[in-house]
Image (cartoon, rainbow, N blue to C red; front, side, top):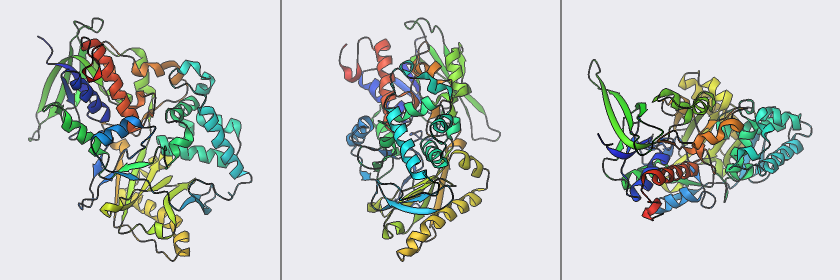
Length: 490
């Protein structure tokens, strides 16, 4: 019995939708199977106040220069973009809890630890200089000794300053949802280089990782892509449980059978099984989720190691909603950087044209995991209290009152069964130098994609789009009978 379609794609996030669009442009047929009841993956936009004021619970930022793939998609879909607010001062919370401010783009005037400021600046420059030496396309060409240690060990080998380590902790928590003690030094430096460098990834201005946001939310990207696909391409609420290849060593005769298991809403629920067949498959799930699937034949050992050993960070985006952006009247950007927590970073996530005013608070890493054990009301109380404590001194000095938020919303990505964490699977020591290249290695007719497989901007939406195009190109080379992306002949 011939396959029902050329390609099955598992996952209707940006990666899967991008791949499907490229495949259909090339004349191939495809079916997307998505476990959730929506498209978008980690692009997830809600209007919690039901007032036409959407917020992003997941991915939020892009730029219009170095993130060329996702920006081009945004322009193709005619989506409105908002420049991230950086006007005013940043609040710095020191290792001893002291508060100070500095103009965005600068640095604190002083910190409590002797030589703390100089060590913070020195370690930041060391990160930048070292990551720029990393070859993101050939891991073996790098100093693989960096993969024998955690990032914390690397930092403390260069500085005994508590402030230097606290700075690195802010970076890994905000960027990966993890502590420096959980991440390979090589992996983090590679991750930084994939986005042009630590300084570019952390920057909120032109060329930076957080320069632009979507007025109507990032899920508008995914919805726009889905709307371009042929009717019936996307199957929602279709969680895959098994992938079977008839002959993975013979691409011409290999047939892939995918099983989807669902349950009805009846009482008692009835289990229903659906099967789909294709010539090839693109798997876009984060690799820690690969172990939740049954493969026949089994995945090769390197793939199993990646699935069982990579780590998903803890990221909880908590939004505090306000009637007005009160912080701006106190000449504050809304950006907080805290060495103590519980919040690691806040950003102004307002969309002025919609009168949507909010602060996004990142509850991440170890302290995020700790507070996830609290009831939601207790967690919200800690977050609102932290914002009030750090903003009040500077608002009071400007005769501005810090109001209570009109609403608080959150999304804990670690509790999402189809992500199990955010933003990207991360490698601890001893993994990257052995298995990084296996992230993109096909297994028979199964091809692997997802933002963690991207060379450039891994962990970001741009990386997701790039990986979808790469995987589609690989499939077209095999299945497309001489057709390349865009329908051009080889």
